[in-house]
Amino acid sequence: MTTGSELHAPLRRERTILRNPCTAHSGGNPMRVTLTSRKALGTAAVLSIALGATACGGARSAGGGDGPQTIRFSHVVAAETPKGQAAEKFAEVVDENCGDELTVEVYPNSELYGDEDELQALQSGAVQMLAPASAKFTTIAPQLQVLDLPFLFDSVDDIPDIVSPDTAVGQAIYENQELADRNIQVLGLWDNGLKQLSSNTEMTQPSDLGGQRFRIQPSDVLQGQFDQWGAATTPLAFAEVYNALQQGVIDGQENPYSNIESQNMHTVQEHITESNHGYIGYVQTINTDFFESLSSELQDCVTTASDEAATYNREVAADLNDEAKQTIIDADTTEITELTPEQRQAFKDSVVPSVWEDYADVIGQDLVDELLANEQG
Image (cartoon, rainbow, N blue to C red; front, side, top):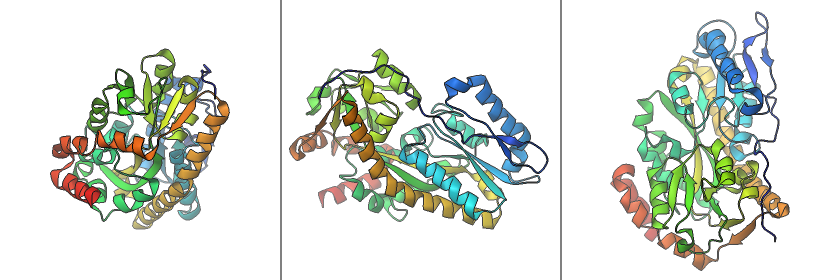
């Protein structure tokens, strides 16, 4: 397979799902607008939509006024990814089951808010729903970094049992008091599968990462992981990764295949190592004040839709990652190296239990002890 790169913009798919929160006339339906990307629309226009939503629909979104209430659901990945499709599924179920009292507007690909400002938007009520990667909560709920522990899962089949609400890991997520204190309620956990490493250097052993700089999400645990592999790290917003790779600001990154392919990262990376070393879980969250403003019937509708979206997410995530991997292979720009069990174990041994123990004071000593006991058992 040849290597090389194709230098073209990463955001290439049109979306037509954004709607003006203001109605066209009294009692009318929200007006539809077409967006291709934040770049195509212009930042000022996107902000105008957001401010317009607050100005003309804020009362309804907060539970008061006449007409349907609106959930503005913002996320940072492409609509074709597992998270993007789960968000659409959530909106579809709400539309089918909640009658005319509740509507959902989905804003993908950082078209409304990005990594740097989406959590603030959720807490303030500028949006009502997000599904950020768990690493995004590092500064406000550090315990959620448990999901960033390297090699927490050996396969995607392990995920449901380890993160269910009645497990120690699940309780750290669903019953997190630091999130509750910040007006954030957890509805569910969506998967995007396991992460792979990409770079312009072939990587078959931990030492191959030495001297390289990798993009990470803002997580101390992820920094510790790459430290053990001898690599430097740079936290970057997801939307900035393609350009940073293209311009050589960073050498590599970690993501599931679906995120790599949907943002065209593979066109500027000569090598991908199928390491399955980490997990990207998306924490579906809702503004607590908004949720509690809903009637009990609408609350039930929202939680049911969240459960159905989570089930759907797990059904499609593996298929979408397999399809993305094949698309990368067909593009013939990137060599994929599948680690042998022995090679993967060498990566694992270099960070487990050392990284797990290093961050026990952040994640919780009891939780880490339980996970290590399960690992050894």
